[in-house]
Structures are given as C-alpha cells and as structure tokens.
Image (tube, rainbow, N blue to C red; front, side):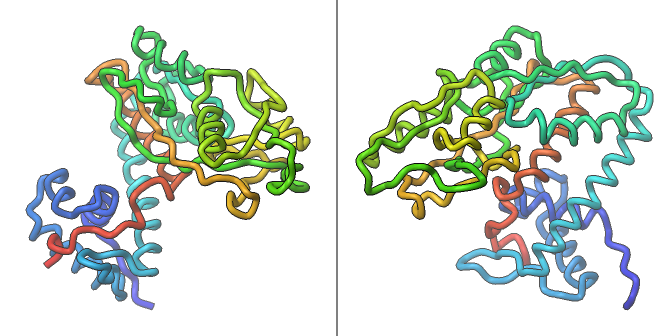
Length: 309
C-alpha cells in the first residue's frame, strides 16, 4: 500500500464545506476562490484513491468512503489545531468562567477540560453546572464568560446556535415503559421541576396526540430524574447526550408515543470579542460538542454541486 500524506489545507476546505453545506461558503470563509477549493477536492479524491462524493438530486453527498474520510479529516485537524494551540498558547494564563447544563456535566465536561488542560496548562477554569435560566442570567450579568445552554427562545447579545439535538423519550434499561397505549391509565411522566424546556415539550406533544398523562415524579436534579426513570416510575424526555446505563432511549412509535422535535443548543458569550483564554475554550467546546453529537451537525447532508467543477 502506497504511503499518502494528506494535505491539511485540503482537509480543512473539505471539512469546512461539509459543515457549512456549501463549498462556495467554505471558500469565502477560508479566503480562497471556489475554483481553488474545487481543485483541492479533486486532489483529495486522487490522494484517497476513491470517490468522495456522489450525486444527490441537484447536489452532492458523501459516499461511504467520503463519510470515513470526513471523520478522519476532523480528527487530523483537531490534533493539528490542538498542537498549534499548545505551542503558541503555552504562555496563556488566567481564568475562564464556564457554565453548562447538567446534561453535559458528566460527558462533555471531562473531554473539554482534558483538551483544554493539555493545550493550556497554565489556564484555570471556573465551572458552574446549573439550569438554563441561571446560565443565561449569569452570562448577561457578566458572571460567566461562556455558557452552553438549551435554546428557549431567549437571545443574548452574543449567542449562536451551534447544533440541533433530537429529543427522545427515555425509559428504564430493564423492562418496558410500565404503560400500555391501549390502556386506560394515563402515561406516568418523570420530569424536572418547572420551568423545564424538555418537560414542556413532552406535555405539549402528548396533548397534541391526545394521550393523557400524569406527573409521577418531579425532581430538582438530573440525578433524581435518572433514578426515577431507571426504577420505572415514569418515562421522561431528554436528549441522547449523557444517558446513564440504567436508562435508554425509546422508539416513539413502538411505544405508542408521539414524535418529538429537536432542541437547539446555544453557545452564549458574555462579550462580542472574547479574551484569548475564553476564545480557546470556546473553540475546544465547539469541537467537543461536534464529536459528541455528530448527527446534530451537517456532515451527512448534500452540498451544492455548483461549487465543484
């Protein structure tokens, strides 16, 4: 097998185009012409030795080999960027104040902190894991530099939606939902204390479907919610992020439950221009989220055919 050295600039154009859904937009983002990006993509296919793209209606989508190439391209770029940050940012010092939803505390946070610590050993993070309302309040009042929160329609001055995450009905890992769709008993719900975006999404969906329900368990914390769900006291609604082994996502139709919408994931910034430390943490946070929930990004969608000659 011949040894191939992939060009990181080519990989960056490829990844950027797939995430933006357009290689014309990628060219603009990277300061290149569309013809230059097209030439890069042809080079990538030549180096890979397989087709990367296939026709998909009026656009292009990835082949199976292209999907594999995209996953490795992201990993190569992440390692390159981490090495660059570690070398160039080794002298960065100070504090960054970060806020997260409970859903991310046991999953995304360790990965994020690990990446950050390796690249910037002199920087320190002050973290706070709380619910949406407090996160947004702390960002707008300047008590947090960054916050990762679910979208409740509240716009802060410097926020952006970074992903759309599917909501799922969650039941115990062992056993069923303890509810029969054809029975007379209302669906037992386990939920966080109000106000809760996912609780409202659950009750709204049930009401629209004409399914009676009752609050069987209310918890002030996510840990209590997982315990109640695992014990079979009721079903709940969360996202696939951070599910413990004691629960699992249910297939809605198979359990007589209505389909649920997606939920926006928003990165809130305290200022338009972040300091060097906060900017580095924001970049690492975006990569960590992308790796954790790839289905919420645009890797699988088709891109504009006209951008590739």
